[in-house]
Each structure stands twice: as C-alpha cells, then as structure tokens.
Image (cartoon, rainbow, N blue to C red; front, side, top):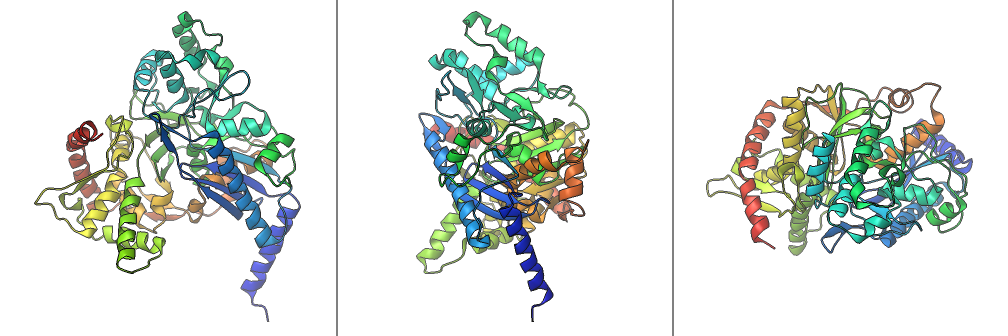
Length: 543
C-alpha cells in the first residue's frame, strides 16, 4: 500500500512533469566565476531541475578574462545538462518555457564595434587595472566609481590611448552580452546597470548630468560616439526585455528542440540575483554572497553622508539604493588549503568525500581561539581595492609565540576570507550607523551548516540567516525575476511579490552574534590591518 509521502512525491512529480510539458516552467541561468548554473522553476518558485558546467577564468596578457568560446560552450553545456536532467527525471523534452532570465558576474567591460565584433578580450570584475580612471571619475562625478565598473574600464582605455576606443559602438556586461545575442535587445536590468555607470534612483536610469560631464571631459578626443549612444538601455524588474529569437534559441540549445518566442526579463548581475534569492530587496535588509569573491549589500534608508572609496552605491533590481562592499577574494585560498588536506589523505590511503572533508575542517575551526591564536593569513589571489592592492599574494604568517594548531589554522583562513569585507562593512555599520534587522547569507561559505553563519555573525555583529533555498544561488534568483515579470499582480512590487509568492512564512535558520566571536574578530582585524605591510612586501618581492 502506498504511504502518504510516496503519493505526495508522485503527485509532485506528476505536476512538475505537466508544468514542463505545457511550457509553464521558468528558466534562470547564471554565469558565475567558476560555474555556470541553470535552474528550472515552477510558478511558485520551486526548483524542479538544474544543470551546471564548471569553468575558470584565464590570466592572459595581464588581464583576467574568459574567451567567447568559453562563454558559449559553457552556456550550452550548462543548458544541455539541464535538458538531460529534465529528460531523465520527467521523461519529457524542454521545448517551451514561460520565461527566461540570464545573469552573470557583475561589472567588467565588453566593447563591440559597429559589426558587433568584440574589440578587446572581455575584462572581468577581477581586474584591478583601472585605478587612475577610478580616481579621476570619482573626482569628476563626486560619486565613487569602483575599478570594476564598465565606465572605469572605458575611461582607463581612453587614458591609455588604446586604439580600439574610437571603434566602440556598444559596451555592456557579460549578462548584457548574452541577453543581446539571444534577443537582439541591447538592455540591462537597473541593478546590473548600476555596476556600469551611476544610477539616478529618482529616474531609474543613468545619471544624465554625469553622462554630460563625461562627454565634456573627453570632447577634445573627438570620438565618433557619445556615451549615451554606446550604453545599453536600462530596465527595472518586471519590465519585458525582448523574446528569444530563432537564432538565439539555436545558440542556447544546440539540439534545436527549444522554441523561439519565449519572453526574457532584464538581465541582471550576481548582486541583484543574490538579493532576489535571499528576499533582500526591501529597506533594512541585506545579503552577503561568499564564494570566489565576497560582497555584502544593504538596502539603505537614505544616502550616505559622504563618498567612501570602500563603498559602492548600486541598486536593487527595482532601482532602490544599496550600499555594497565588494571584495575580490574570499574562498579561493581556503579551498586550496582544503585541497592540500585532501591530497594528504589520499597519500596515506584514506579516501574522503570532499563535502565531508570541508565540513570536518570547518567545524574544527569552531574549536579555535576566538582571535585565532595570534595567526595571520591573507587570501589575496588577486588585487584587493578595499585595502589598496592591485595584485595579491596568498600568505600565512605566525610568530613563534602563536598558538599553531589545526583549529586556529582553519579559523584564521575562515576569518581572513572575510577580512577585507569586515574593513568595508565597519564603515557602513559603525561610521554611518546603518541599521540592519538581519543579513541573509548565500554561497559556498555557508554550505557547512552553522559554521559560515557563525563566523559571519561574529565579523559583522549582525544576525545572519541562511534559507534552505540559498544553495540554489543566483540562477534561482534570476529565475525568480523572470517569474515576477510574468506572474506579478497589478501594482505589486518585487518585495511584495517575493513575500507573497516565494518566501511566504520562510525566515531561514538564523544565528545570532556570539560576543566572544565579535571580540575575537575585532582583535583579528586589527592584526590584519597592521600586517598589510607584510602583504605589500610579498607583492613587491615575489614576482
């Protein structure tokens, strides 16, 4: 006799099969730094299938980049993995969808000529090569322009007198590029746009006065374009952003089964999708994404009192002002150390599941001294603008008196993965007195239940919550934005839609700050700041 749970699961699978077969499912794909993930959801946001493809950036000629071949082969592989998952699980093919959304790592620079050809290799968010442009534009606009932003890359190319600048006819981000090629529409969502050029939250568009100031600043160079002409159109969440063309369908699905005509939502960056995925789009909410890079975002009640080079001002996918602390480095060095322990275990004939290894080492960190026993580490695989580094050198440092054991070793590497973030967030929380009810965590750092949360709560002295759905990440977040576009009620805001249709009654697992962790992290961060001279010496001495 069937038990109730089996019947429920069968009904659920039958319903999901019907949703897919009838073309009511919604697809979200996000191109992250190390993985391209595709998530299929139903009308109430429940993930029903997924696919993925791993990839890595390249460091070529002093530039962190991904080739166009990598982008398209990776996107196609991720979609094919999803389609295979659907076929295996539900016995149907993916042909029709209710909506699609594309997302990718924010910022960066993709410049195209009049024929739509890429002029220079894609310059990703990871590059810290635009300090001169960042400083000059910040002064020109009286508005902080981070090195990662598209406008900083364009202006640095101008200052460097790069030949390609005169040929520019369109600049966009990775998400904007994918969307353009699949729909023919040169648009981006407002959250993504806010990582290209400053956004006027009153108009939800690029600041017109700043565009004019830029054009006047470069007028003597006599380029055959004005800035507004080469930037994409800005759209807010809920607006339609075109449909999948026949060429786009063939480009995404090499099997040829996917039909054209599917509506697409505005493409967004990983910051915007993280806000959607954690229901952090309302004022006094925030989220932190901790993976290869780490960023925290707080939806502000008002403008900051002054310009801070450590704080980016971006927006939610609906165009509300957000204070963002973005750091280039987070878990890469931590993951390298875990891989070293994995290599050791294999060398002595012990095979251990990698998830088990991560959990074992992460939990060991909770046994360490509050301030890591005097140990110090820097996780700088690349430069870190928060602390003023254009290049990085991963380091582990201790004194003869330091308490060097496994617990403190793992703890210091968890702490330092949030070190630069702590420096920036202290400005928002301690200097600007920004109020937060809680912050939602997502990303690889939070996979081991309770550990990443506890460390983050200690770093920020704010309650940290993780939802069961947080592991779905940005691909799920952009799928939710696509769902909002077609499912929203008249006059319903994104925050209201997420509360009603997606997160009703879900608050997540919350960890409160532990006083010892807070004091320990404060002590560690003072050591971290003093030790930056060691990191500087390493950058200058190790080539």
